[in-house]
Image (cartoon, one colour):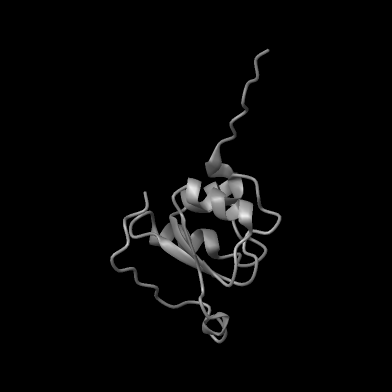
Amino acid sequence: MSFSTISLPISPGANFSFERIDPSYVDNARTIGQTPGHAVIAGKNYGQVSSREHAAAAPRYLGLRMVIAKSCARIHRQNLINYGVLPLVFINERDYDGRSRRYGVGKKDLRKTR
């Protein structure tokens, strides 16, 4: 018995990344570009109900390199890793509270994610 895999293109789906949360995300991500890439700051259980690979692959296609969250859904966390996105969790959830919508996140001494 043989099974075949259907592979859908990532780029069209990327146009809808985070559209319910931030309609400007795609345009901002494209402005920033693949280099240096960008990070997403998220709340609890990031990626819940987003266990499909495209939920991780589409933002990665737009340059997502890192997710910093209060917590991350188990399957989605693994999909992020598989697509080269570094999932990080706040040690102290209160560090998340009060963050502005946009602020810089630096990385130091981390291997490049490509």
